[in-house]
Amino acid sequence: MRHFAVIGSGPAGFYTAEALVKAYGETAMVDIIDKLPVPYGLIRFGVAPDHQSIKAVSKRYDKVAEGGQVAFVGNVGVGEAVSIDELKSVYDAVILATGAPHDRKLGIAGEDLPGVVGSAAFVGWYNGHPDFADLDPLLDGQAAAVIGNGNVALDVARILAKTRAEFAGSDIVGHALDALEGSAIRTITIVGRRGPHQIAMTPKELGELGHLEAAVPHVEPDDLPESGADAALDPGVRKSVAHLRDFATPHDDKPKHIEFDFFARPLRIEGDRRAERLIVERTALDEAGQSVGTGEIYAIAAELVVSCIGYQTPRIEGVPYDERGGKFANEDGVIGDGLYAVGWARRGPSGTIGTNRPDGYEVAETIAAALSPGSDGGKAGGDGLAALLVERGVKATSFADWRAIEAREVAAARPDSPREKLVRHDDWLKVLGH
Ligand code: NAP
Figure (spheres, rainbow, N blue to C red):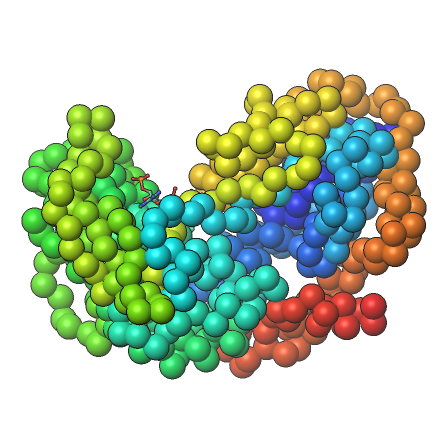
């Protein structure tokens, strides 16, 4: 028997567990360890609450967890309750699937003013992550700036723009739904340091902005390159740019406006004890397609600033780190002897949820090549971990525990919602009588 510890229960963790079971047949036991008592990582806490069809992928992960060879071990912080070295002593291999849940910083003055938040915090707040349950973002101003031209910026702009009725069917948490309903924000400016041809937004997600009940998107026609230039774009980007061209034509006005401000590089955030405006410099593209400042400086009104400029993997003591990439230092998923990385912790924060499947399967193959299926490493596996946790008084949660929490959340759902998430650590543990 071979015993594996996968750290992190998001998509990368589940696909890797599935792949290890496929590679080893009945001779593998996999523990998916998470610091939170509940599973699914990015699916539960990152994917937008109004994108339920994407979240439905967790049903597939349920099958993995209930297949008999994969156990969920929640409420166990690796690097806190147990160290990597301890895990390596009880498992044949340890695979880090910890994602990239920390915000990259803008690195500009005013970033710490009230009213400035990173997307991990803001998204965590409306998705019920316990670390951000008390974020209470400032929604009392008329204007918000969303920095970044990727899909997370689109998620944030859309969530800020939607009416309460438009959240029907979503699992946005009640505290965020109520706060957003009372929001005074009327103008949401999406700030990109490069141009329409350089966006990282995908067509379906961008197109959604064109169908909002109370908000209308707008692109400055002058920001768009000559339409003939679109032919050279990748098909996906070309479709996205077609949406931007549509947003540059007149549409019926609505109470809220989503303004695309391209070629604008954030310089600083100003305000009297809170954010009031984002100061940007107009940019142009150099020959390599990178943004360079033109010296023209102007202000964008913004009492809320959400930076959506990418994420980082948190460090774990003793694990080599790639500072520039914001991920674990690794070679094709191999960090060192018996230690591997998958998903965003391996590649950095890019790609869709599905990208993590081949990624996990590839690393599982690498592991199978190093530890041949059918061999026995003599490791204690889950029993060894359980003994360590008992020693430390750490009460782990199981998949059955998660099912009990899930049932409580489903029972508490609003009439138009699949669940009302519990958002605090203690509330989860209370359901279990811990
Ligand atoms: P992303 O796609 O990498 O976009 C990051 C954006 O931030 C880019 O436009 C980048 O501009 C900009 N940026 C970076 N540093 C900046 C700075 N200092 N100042 C101003 N702008 C800066 O990242 P993401 O939006 O966080 O998304 C992460 C991944 O999750 C992506 O693969 C995304 O597609 C995926 N995702 C998918 C969905 C969905 O499918 N529905 C939803 C959410 C996220 P430059 O290009 O100039 O660097």
